[in-house]
Image 1 (tube, rainbow, N blue to C red):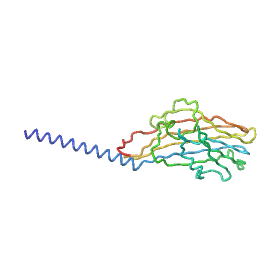
Image 2: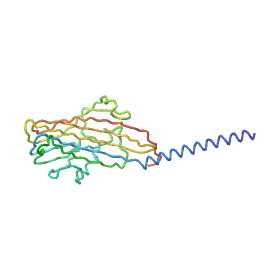
Image 3: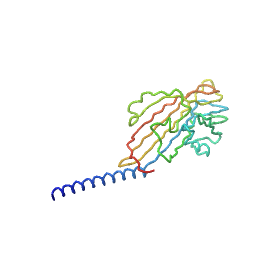
Image 4: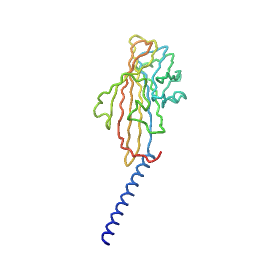
Length: 243
């Protein structure tokens, strides 16, 4: 009888130690995740030209979620977007279907010996909550509106994890005078990234890149091709027990 009692107590002690160890591990990983977590949106917009442009007006897409919330609108509103020339007039517009930034400039002229000439605007914005990098089309900031969405194969080896890749079309407006052989390239990107450290650094992210090349003078709307890659990286994060 004493042997059975000792054996039972021993098993209970082992189970207790195992339970405490599991709880301690879960508590540690949750705390490490919370304390090290950061979410960041990174935005860029580059306008490159090989020729002088005059009487320039652009309406460019600004990344926003389906409800119209954008991580970079405050930067445009308060003038904290890096790289905006002093002589540009910048105004935000919400069309109901998309958020656009209007850029007005008398001229954009490449300096002597500098062709093509690029102007790059950028911003990094912290997110107070985890960014949805698995389904940004329905939950996070992207260039909108979204038209003609189609899933495409991802380029092998370029992204970690099990990324999913898509193409779709959005639009911009351009109005400027230029030589017939002038070439203008618009390249704008949005990246949402979560990072944390539990024993070692880890992350997940998505990225959207819209590109358009225009030749000669412009006056009207043009379609931009967007390349979207989501579900990049690790999603092995602890289940949080409280907010």
